[in-house]
Image (cartoon, rainbow, N blue to C red; front, side):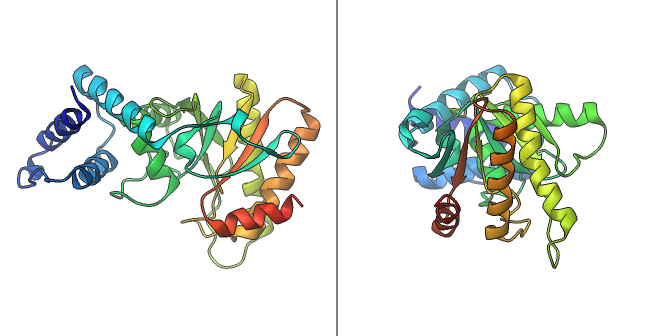
Length: 257
């Protein structure tokens, strides 16, 4: 199968899953097809898919990853011993684990093509990630508490695992409890990574997007928490602070000066 044939197969499969999609026509351009595929994957509930679908999806996503390129830890320059600052797409980073800023349902973002990191991670990992998260939540029997962390495989991402954590949602002023919960997100992820035997973790800017935690304060908490954890666990885990926006990069640069 060519990459175009894989894309068409995946679209036909997903469109055939639900009767309400019967009126959706197959787009003409590759970019429109990719947009539709991401949308369909984003809204798809955590239901099993056929072995053929998974095989084609995995081949398609691996080829897309090759097109987008992979960044490895060895290519990065440390900002401090064992700590890195990297601006780029976290779904192309080959660390042992990347951190997903999840919501309390822990099932990913269901908004088609939304710009949040939760959406991107689930999109490029494949449908298996939502299934794995749903299984974990069924076992837990309740929503995920803020400041905790869970781990899943990364499936079609270049990292090995995804650490999912729910950050505090800010409505008004940031409270002491909000600060403590955000710090707990970082500690929980590092503790879980250490328990799993991982050696590198890439953090996104937890809670600073849809959850409205002020970027500069969030970065200060992130850096101080990680530095304190690494002092207590020397040389155990290397940490990458991943940013996407120029403004966040500048904030972290100042903190490392």
